[in-house]
Length: 296
Ligand SMILES: Cc1cc2nc3c(=O)[nH]c(=O)nc-3n(C[C@H](O)[C@H](O)[C@H](O)COP(=O)(O)OP(=O)(O)OC[C@H]3O[C@@H](n4cnc5c(N)ncnc54)[C@H](O)[C@@H]3O)c2cc1C
Image 1 (spheres, helix red, strand yellow):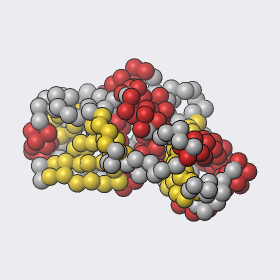
Image 2 (tube, rainbow, N blue to C red; image 1 turned 90 degrees about the horizontal axis):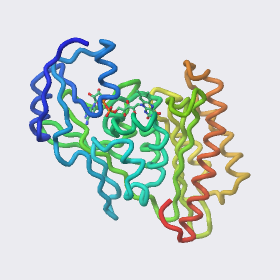
Image 3 (cartoon, rainbow, N blue to C red; image 1 turned 90 degrees about the vertical axis):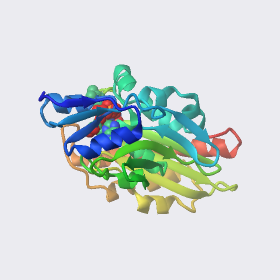
């Protein structure tokens, strides 16, 4: 590891000023990814800015109109266990349960995960399907971006130099909606997934699909929304047979790369299988929500 200066600001303004002043400065959240990159000398920042003493960045807040707000430093373990997340956005808590090991989940943060932008990570896929947004802050002020636009490529985000991710916002699901995530990790449960599929389905009072969102992770350099499959779902009275038929369209819209976790062709086949699982689970939850069983 190359030597670097180190700072522990206590306000967001101070952190932004530090990051703006030095070209090769890096924020530090949980350090799960950053410390590895420093040790492997893949990064050599002149300054590391630890965010952990800035108040408010680890908070989870629920608002009936705006939905869930998760501060950038909220840890994966908190997403997994927090009562507000579990009550209002259970798919996020379920997703977090599958991230790495318990030790890793106690250190890694949601903001660090999104800013690292490894295409194999789980949260970007689920947050894309949930139409989540991020709030970014720098010395000039704040801006908001959809997660789908924040992650722009392999380990690449829309963050500008000196900019910090402050919070993630997840809007409430529509009425009579359900969300689910299915991931496949053939090299063991604590490994990053070969792929993951997140689905959101909403129904009208007659059980016809009014809204469908389907995001596939780790089949391209960033999560993909399968809009053609979403269109095929909307307006349909969904049942198991229809979902199977529509899931068969998924591979047509993917051209995934091969890597150590599996070939591109295997990914396409598994995307159909896990896409169908996510859609089936989302449908069951949407029906439960329609029957008054609460948020799904
Ligand atoms: C063994 C192992 C298994 C893993 N398994 C999974 C898995 O199954 N699923 C999964 O999704 N992920 C997995 N991960 C990845 C892990 O979740 C992320 O690397 C982690 O969440 C990064 O968060 P962090 O808080 O440690 O970020 P850090 O390592 O502190 O930072 C990561 C990057 O983001 C930048 N950054 C951090 N916070 C901010 C901010 N607020 N604003 C701007 N930039 C910021 C840093 O400068 C750095 O470039 C695994 C990692 C390991 C090592």
